[in-house]
Length: 265
Image (tube, rainbow, N blue to C red; front, side):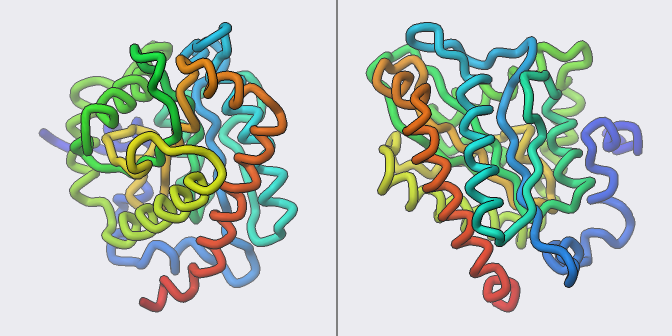
């Protein structure tokens, strides 16, 4: 299969695959002495895409936007980074545009916020995902199908051709990006384990389109299962939303504080 520029442009990944780009250390290329690192918060779904609709009609798009706004306030208050959101209102944004948003701004990291669903109403708890072409387990595979299906609302949804391109991009993903994504994942799992509850071990991986940028450390946080009565009630409550934002904000600050040391290692 040929990787023409149009195919890559549609995935928003031309810049990361430009000649010579892969040979330049990602963090060195993104960071500028006069700018703080940029954190992109990506509240999933929105607009015509409600995401999953759970117990008592709680909608994923509303829950994750509220938590995303709270996380933005938390991070800005720490003064350690700049923050931008892929969406700050109830609007629909295709998955590829979310990836492009982070890449064009040379983000240091991207945190995509979601809530999960299950046919088993007893399943509850959070998970933090990083990108990998093969899902780590059946739960990860189910989350992958659920979140990647957001593009069914886009007229030009992700095609088999695009997924093949995504497979190739996975093999090109920088070792540095994988290491940073894994560290951010670990930090967030540690924090959520203290504040909330995890589903299984908490850390999983799968082929999420929104995590496919080869040069941006990215994680996807499934904050809980809206199909579970307790999770749905907690994730809808402003006090719990604020608590989750504080926990994630503290762990992102921890990651950013250690970033220079990780760059030297």
